[in-house]
Image (tube, rainbow over all chains, first blue to last red; front, side, top):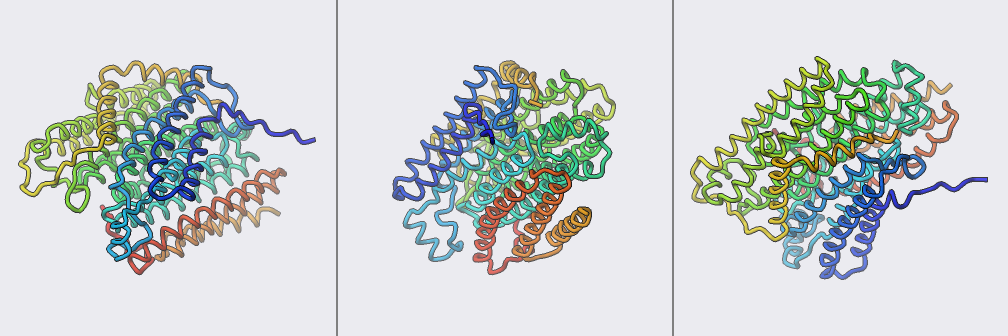
Length: 516
Length: 98
């Protein structure tokens, strides 16, 4: 007799809602008349995100499950619920930005500048597919950090990435850059996921299972020196580190962040980063936690290189979106410091809560910063070149002030959320009491100081130089964009002045650690 | 002997990896990625035999589905950029740099 597998529908409900809404979105594309589609998609997308968030809260209140769901393949535990909540909030604000139809191409298949494209513009065509695509990507983001075996993780990685490859190529302005970003992201992303998959294959060969707990058990008996294990870990690491944009796998990030439509960049810079870090933590802590002396030295080098590359190359950037991309690389380096701070259960909980808090603060600030970028426009699209931002503080003091505040939060100045994020992660690394990690924290602090230089440079440029006569215009934001900027600015202040509630929440989520 | 199959799979993966790095046509680069995925499949099936369970064989099916989805997305993207530039060379697409 074969026993049917059990599925914990309640635990998986947030995922099911998001994927269900995405499928309904596809049906809307197929059957609803063109003029109705947007009117259906926007509420459907936003409501499904709210519904999933409500379910996450309900689950948190009803108590976190202590066993993985769906026959051990999806782990809905404390950290997962926190990460889900964070991703859903960040996706909600990103979808508010996506709502701006000015950002997306009317007909992606038409050659830029052709008569066909002209026709699409005059007809008022629009790719409302971006909503279901974004929902599929968000669903993948939710599944990625929750997956408790490497096969589900691989599928989630692809479900998250494939829609993003397409979305990157849909920018309305600067079509060539957008298409190029899409090709680059796709080819490099597919390349890296092949590495992830080969790593999975080797670990399967080592452990006889792709279950994270199974790999952990196999490690306990093997001693951790097997070739299959070492090579498999390295290849899995390449795939995961690519997704977070750690050096030397960071090359795609500036290109893709620049070329993609800015709302999609906001979604990638916040949601994807949170999801990818959740997956990194799960693989390296749950499956390979007993093997930490093997991966820590490599990850030390990667983290050091990432923060140095991110901070130094950001200084040379002349494009605002590329600069924010390099800033994101540097932040990935700072976050990796926390990933290495593993030890006893209490130490792990400390490091995990720091990481969760940092991810939330960074995600919210980065969405806000990209929202501001969408509002500063030239006749040909957004004003990306830094020289165009000169004197913005005199033209539009409110917007420049908010942007300056976001930049200070990236730099980690006290009274912004960025300060407490960095503090929480670095504190956990120092608490481990190992010289090699404390040394890395010193390097991270130095790198943050170097990074502060280019943030301050933009602030000086905005406030202390004269605006040019033909400077960019600051568009009157739609209600959605102003909500996003307002929310991000409020959260950045609130978490900077009064971080305790969210810190407590992160601590509570981290206390139970990952389900083994 | 499963070792031969593993060596073959590693060779295919390496050929694919080198192809991605040295070839210039986006379609060929993409085919090399597919070769890498198939090398993974071979490794999965071999390990399934070696470990004496069928997990690896099941995974191979999942990988095929994912690879098919990737082809759909990938060709769409490459065809779009080809229509714009009349070239599928990854060297020509060089507006984004530094």
